[in-house]
Each structure stands twice: as structure tokens, then as C-alpha cells.
Image 1: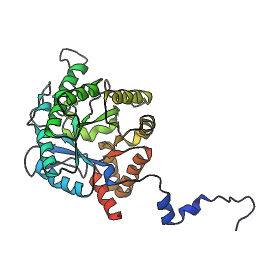
Image 2: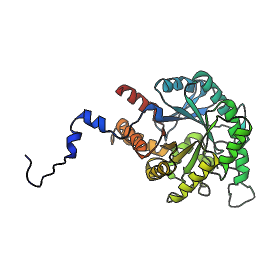
Image 3: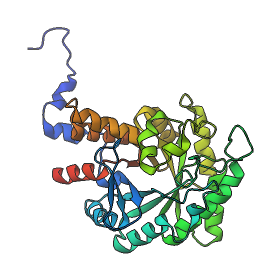
Image 4: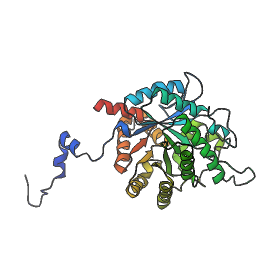
Amino acid sequence: MNTPGYPSVRMRRMRRDAFTRNMMRESSLSAANLIWPVFVIEGERRTQSIASMPGVERMSVDLLIERAREAATLGVFGIALFPVIEGVKTPLAEEAYNADGLIARAVKALKAAVPNIAVITDVALDPYTSHGQDGLIDEHDPTRYVMNDETVAVLIKQALSHAAAGADFVAPSDMMDGRIGAIRGALDAAGFFQTKILAYSAKFASSFYGPFRDAVGSSTNLGKSTKETYQLDVANSDEAIRECALDVAEGADMLMVKPGMPYLDILARVKSEFKMPVAVYQVSGEYAMLRAAAANGWLDYDKCLMEALIAFRRAGASAILTYGAVDAARMLSRKN
């Protein structure tokens, strides 16, 4: 009964049926939007559990290939490789650009076995440094300040070694000034015109990275040190936009916002202002919280994971790095 003063416009009418809800859905999610971050270790038929990241394992390259085939079959866009380096960490991170190192071998193996999935490599030194920082430090400086230009020189070598191995994207995550332009210039000079750069442009000095540092083994080396002299202050939005603008001007093909859920405002601004592909990283702490809450029966992991991924898409993400990428791809395949 429509009484005087009662609304003639009823928003709930279009929410009543599944077919109208589906028709009106403004944001979509597919496996093609997903990037699966993986932790790679030496050896054969090896896995290692990660206590702070339930459901995630470090794995040797042979096992990664098997799982990458499933991810590709499900339509997952890409795999992001992160090395777990054992025994060869040094102050100058020489292992980072070893042409026969773990990441170079992993890239070659993946591209040979699963050519239809993008391979993305992390360009940063923290897995390789004995001090756990993303760059080189002056041992005589009592502040342990990370040196910018000296670090960029090593990052160039690292990016070139990944491109030579066949990486589709190199992803500098270090937040050094000028590294995107320097890497782009070096790639082009070496003939790697088609190697794309996914720039971690808005990477914040977040407390949500803890489980990741456990996974790659840098937390012990880092100790009580922080990365606040190069990663963004968590309170700053305009500074993040300036960082993105610089990376665009220097030749980035795609931008990154990291972490994800606490930085949806940054993601939306970056997409709106630059109108280019933007990735977002649902980082280890975000993922671990979902898993821990689900293990305690406080929420439904599947539903909350999908809701979070849709939120990233709604805010403007073209691609989402999530440790739940294969889980989400399986759920999406069951719906189709």
C-alpha cells in the first residue's frame, strides 16, 4: 500500500531478484585480474610452511611449476616471484644479480613450462642484504642511512638479469629515487624494449608487512631498523601522488599501491589521476588476518576474500596481488 508521503522511488525493487542484482553490478572480478605472489626456495620437491601466513608455503621451482600450471588453467594473470635466499646474504647484495641465481632459474623454468602466464620479478635488495634493508648502506654512517644512487646501480644489474632470464615484468619495490628511469634506460639500451615495468610507486612504511618479512627471512636481519627513510609515511596522500607522477614520467608501464585495504583512498586517487593500469597488493598482514579470523570461526574466508578483491576492483585496481589468488580463481571458476 502506497500511503501519502511514502517514497515512489524504491531502491530495493532492483535488489529483490538475483537477475537484476547481477545486471546492475558495477564492478567485476575475474582471474585475469589476479597476480599470485609466491616464495621460491632452492632444492627439489621442497616446501616450507610459514607460521605467520597460514595456507602459504615456500616452494622449490619444480613444485612451483606444477602449481603454476593450475593457476594458468584457471586464468590467473601472473605470478610474482619472491626469493628466499639462504646463506649468501651480503652487505652489497651481489647475489641479487647472479645470472644463475634462484630467481633467474625460476623465471626460465616458468617461461619454458607455463608460457601463457605472466612472470613478474621483485627488484629489491632486502632478500639479499645481510642487514635486511632494500638498498646499500654506508657502514661508516652511524644512522645506517640507505644510499640512493649506489643502490640504483645494483637494481639496474638485478633488473637486467631478470629481463635476460625472460621476465615479463620487472617490479622495482625499493622506493629509491630515480630508479624507474634508470632501469627503463638500461633495459632499452640492452634491447629489452618489451620488458615491462610494474613500479611500486606508492609503497608505504606499513606495519602490515611483518609476515612477508618472516617468509623471505629478512625480519631477523632487519631487527629493530625501519624503512621510513625511503618508504612513504602512512599519513601522506599527496606525496604518494607525486611519487606516482615521477614514475609515470620515468617510463613505468603500470603503477602499484601497497598495502591494499588500508589504502583504498590512495588507489582510487592514483587511478583517477593517471588513468593507466594500477595494481594493488593485498599484503601478508591483510591476508594473515583473514586466515586467522577464519580459523577462529569469526568470519568466512572465502566470502571475505572475494569481498576484499571486489573492493580493490571498485577502487580502480586493474590487477590485485593476493596470496589467495588461486583460491579466488577456483571460486570464480565454480561460478562460471
